Amino acid sequence: METEEIIRALPKVEQHVHIIGSTRPETLLWIINDSGAESPFETVEDIRGFFRFRDFPHFIQVYSAVDDLVSKEAYYERLTYEMLEADARCNVRHVECIFSANDHVRRGLDYGMMLDAINRGIRRAERGFGVTCTIRVDLVRNYGPEVGMRVLDWVGEKGDNIVAVDIGGSEERFPPGPYEEVYRRARGMGLHLVAHAGEAAGPESVRDAVELLKVERIGHGVAAAKESALMGLLRERGITVESCPVSNLRTNVVPSLRQHPIRDFFDRGIRVSVNSDDPTMFGTDMNNEYIQLHRELGFTVSELFKISLGSLESSFLPEGRRLELREEFIEEYGDLTGCDENF
Ligand SMILES: [Zn+2]
Image (tube, rainbow, N blue to C red; front, side):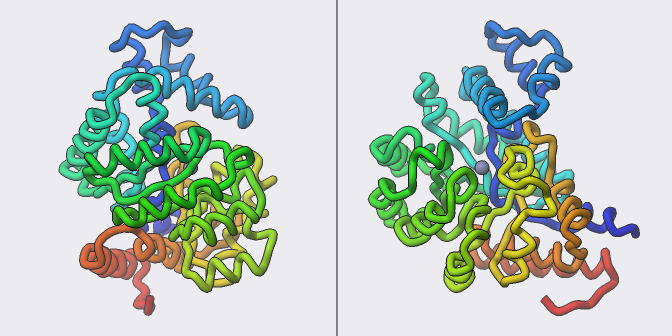
């Protein structure tokens, strides 16, 4: 088997993918037709053209246009199902997806009905492809900690399959500090803690997420590479950096994939995972992410498999399931490579 074929076949875990950022152009057209929404798009080609990444402001435009068009809770079922179908095609076996609830509640949608639709999509995908999925709710830092508390109220009342919280949104304008209390409460509710940090802002954003919010994983974390003490802290505390290489390239967080710090993180013993973030908007998928690391940063099959195992170990799956999957992963790796390595 050729190297890239093996990489495609490697069993994987995705820790960082936004449901909205996984919307397919065909599906958006279906939504437009079903809802009868006013829209400048008449064909899938129109939407493909609109989705083609130009620059960061344009990406935000695409993302919020999709947010606007998701005008019925039930649409979330298809979006979630198709996100998982695409992941399953890359042999992703477990997904932890991101749901920005208030983006839609503030547009008039019902939180509980959306959550039900997402879980219907998850169950269908599990039956169809054997992939499992849990949800992390993104409090979106732009709305402020009060809204964060309100979202936690919703999760407290109905938290089916929600395992973690996150703060995405405009990192440079909204630092992590004000979310200390919100994160303390989330931890008390038994939720895992993650924050987008070090993507649009500097290393202090990562440090605050670690020190003040006590996160277990960092979304992106690119800026941590600027401070070796901070990288030491991430390693010591066993914090996973959820790397999204192609996303970082598209949004100019890194000038080229060759300069992406995932290589440095990995070589220093920091746990990293590889993720697609907003795959349909960045023109990527999990196979492409892994293959780019091989092509541009020289990651070997064995190193990529170590990343995959690390993504599984730092997932929020219960221990029993994690160990079960670990056995399956190692067996599959052995079948693919004929290697009998110790992991
Ligand atoms: Zn993200």
